Length: 93
Image 1 (cartoon, rainbow, N blue to C red):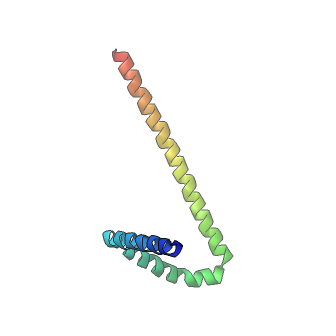
Image 2: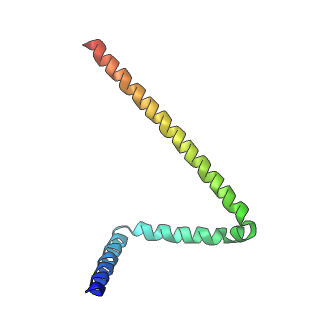
Image 3: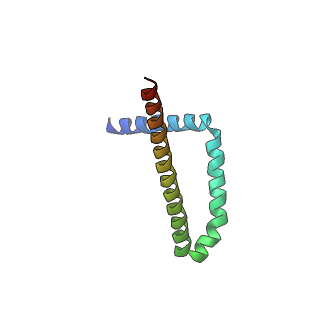
């Protein structure tokens, strides 16, 4: 019984995954591009190792910092726009 349950769960997930891949063929294309890029980067990774990953981490951290800054600015601007709209409505009333 337990084995049948596991097998049916596995089969169901496999069917869902295959359906998803049929729906989004671009996913397969992107996976191929990722593999190609990793193959291109492999010599650099082997040569520079730890330094390479440190640089990648710094780039990702900088990107996250910029995204956080932009999100904060968008939130502030959205709040200010909302406040301006409320003040205009209150002024008209």
